[in-house]
Image (cartoon, rainbow, N blue to C red; front, side):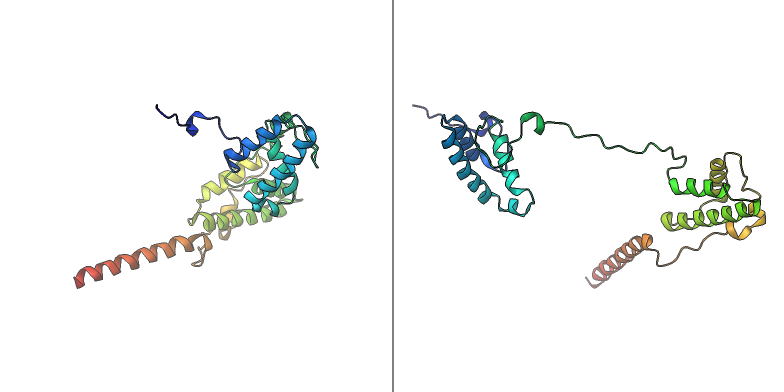
Length: 221
């Protein structure tokens, strides 16, 4: 007589794998009982067992209610007991979360960010051309400084001029400022201790030292 074996591949999927198939069998057994008082009594006993299986649940602020929710889910929402918390329904558990509202602000140059756009708009609101020029010079210096720190390279003057002029929308032209304020367009020296470049530099040094050690070992052999 050939013995028949039961494999997990032929069984139904486990609803909550962290509790295992045996706990789910106990939940189904409790759900099948006719006496509500007995179902409630066994449910409390099973909850104590579930807490022992997952002691980390105690660290959560809603640990008590969470375990009862898990019990309800494993019963496929068919467990009628006197629970200490309102048990969730199937619709509540499968309810889609609300969409997060994102600002739809149009950023013309996303790689420079929204703040550049705000600074240009603020500069254009200054009274008098001298004030506007002074604000634009500060913006130019900031663009060159931030770019050199983040990209570890120099930004071309034409990129700065065209970007700001596009944001100005014809209300102001910064191109003449290149001759009037040449210092504003000077390339910014990248500091040796730049945090953004330290990682790459240290990695290169480490690779060089490792390669030199390997060469020494080969010579010794």
